[in-house]
Every structure is written in structure tokens, then in C-alpha cells.
Length: 212
Image (cartoon, rainbow, N blue to C red; front, side, top):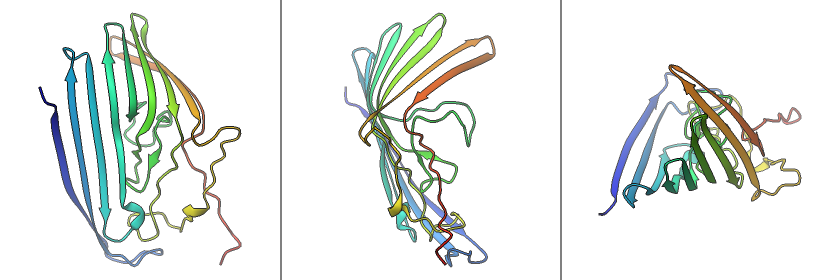
């Protein structure tokens, strides 16, 4: 049996009464397109998902983005699952600014509340009576995606993304990061403990006070 395609196309528009300090743009249109292909076999024990998305912005070239949020194979057994490929992983239940949601890189160019970029990984999930234990091996580091000066809403200052530096230490940009998460529930109470070892996804901003 063939797999299933689902797609969405949206048009976003914003209007402002006045120009801002960094942009004279008072109106903007942005076209957003996403699609997903899903197929399963082996009585549902194996599945494949492919989900790309793209955005075309009227004024800000930094918001002309394309990303594969998921390109993965998942195999499920009674007490374990293996997930391999590019995926998005959500840790925590906060709708914005979750401090433990650290596996995927953030795309502020896509969404100021923090859309996620797909992360190559291998994820082994163990399902036991004492909880669910997820083990992650994350391949490579993706640089944060930031809006440009013509973006509205945007940042109140100009960022030179060409001067960005990634402090990887002894690692390379193609190195490996590691993470673990144990979660358990009892009646209506659910808790989790997370551990991450690797390059922090949150960027720091350095200000050049010598430039006028």
C-alpha cells in the first residue's frame, strides 16, 4: 500500500502604522509551504516520514528558508523503539522559551518564538515499568537562523551573521553530541530528568561598541 502525502500552504501578512528604527517596511507578505510523506509497513512496526518546509519572504532574504524537519525511519518493538534520521524532539511542556528543549537548533528567522531545525540523530527509546529512557546520539551542529534587518517583527539592532563563530573546542562542526532523558508518570503526575553533553544551541550576541 502506498504512503500518504499531506500538505499545507499559508500566506502571512503583517501591517504596521509606522516604520521602525531598523526598517522602513510597514507591510510584509510571507508564503509558507510544508508537506509530509508517511508510510508504514511490517504491520506498523516500521515507518518512514519525510517532512520538508519552505518560506518565501517579501522583504527579508534571511527569511527565505528551506529545511527538512523530519526524514526518519522508526522501528517499534514491545519494549523498545529505534528512530534514525533527521528529526525534531520536544522536551518540556512550555509553549515558548522552554529551557530544557535543547536538542534541536532554533530558527528565529522562521518564528520569533523559536521554530526548530531538523537534527540528524539516532534515538533509542526503552519502554519499561520504571519509565521511558531515551538515549540520543546527535550528529553535527547547525548554526542558528536569525532574521535580517528588514524583518518585522525583528530584532532592535543589526546582526552580522557572516562574523559568527562556533566555539566547538576540540570538536568539529561534524562531531557528535549526546543526550539522555528519563521520564515517568504516576496517575496525573509526570516528571522527567534530562542530560545533554555537547555544543549549546543558544547563541550569544557580542556587541561592537566601536562601530558608529
